Amino acid sequence: MVVVAVLLGQESRSQGWPELDARAYVLVVLAHLPVALRSRHPLAVFTVIEAAAVGFVTLGYWPVVCTFGAMLALYTVASVRRVRIALACAGCMTAVWVYAGVVSHSPSMASVLGQALLYCSVLVWFGHLARRTAELTRQLGAKQAERARRAVAEERGRIARELHDVVAHHMSVISVQAGLARFVFDSDPGKARGALGTIADTSGEALEELRRMLQVLREEDPEAPARAPMPTLARLGELVDRVRAGGLPVDLAVQGTARPLPPGVELCAYRVVQEALTNALKHAGPAHARVELRYAPHELTVRVTDDGEGADPARVPVGSGHGLIGMRERAKLYGGTISVGPRSEGGYEVRLTLPTSAAERGRGGTPETER
Image 1 (cartoon, one colour):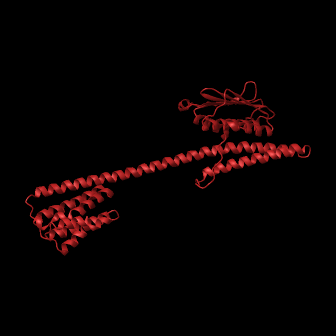
Image 2: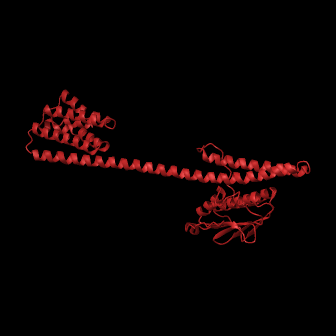
């Protein structure tokens, strides 16, 4: 801007104005160079530029030479300050233009005033739009950050429920095996060693899952080793074997053609079976459990039953605990239905139905829970 103003000033004589001297060039520099600091000190820069322009005009030089810096400074003020401050600066700039017209004895003051009002209005308007755009951008960024924080909080809540399921199941197996080992330690050392081996395997797996989930709860480390995949229905046999080792006979039956399902659906079904078997292990007493998987074209049905005495209502109040809540929330998340309650012929039953197609899941079934 300084270079353009200097080049324009060299045309002053051809336009009928006095030729610029050293004093005039100093004022030209002061009227343009400060715009480099306009973002940090917009009002101070505008004041300096306008003061230099007034001095330039007062000395009788061509006013057009010192107009560029003032216009950019006015736009900057309008883009970072309130409207009333921008209007005050626009009024100041208009007054300078009118003053230049008076000093130079302009033959058409109406034209000078019209130009001043037009340029100032346009600069203030576009500066105001820039300010509004910046504010909306900040608000949008804040909303996106808040949504991201809520998503993280919800995900961590889900992980916490996941962690409860894992810990509850593995600790139940370990507790039962520890009691068995202590009971047969003297009379049957071989069975005691087997129980201790089951405890070692189960505790190792529990620690691995705890480590994986706690890693998710912490900030992600790009150099951390990849975590093991979450359990799927393909590992249901391992779960059943652990429960059998814990003292609860379990049968596993699969109807229909087994096929890969969406990871979330498989994880939901796996965790519901895990929670149901854990409850049976803790509360069913001497019993026999059965796990049935039925693959239909558009849904998966999971049924876990036992013929034990069930939970004692005095020890496990209705609706209490995170296990039942977790099963209901999992079913709801994937558009499925779940029923939990005693059977008429005795024992307990957990029945879960999950849609396996995206279209069915999108309908959002409502879980039904019975006690």
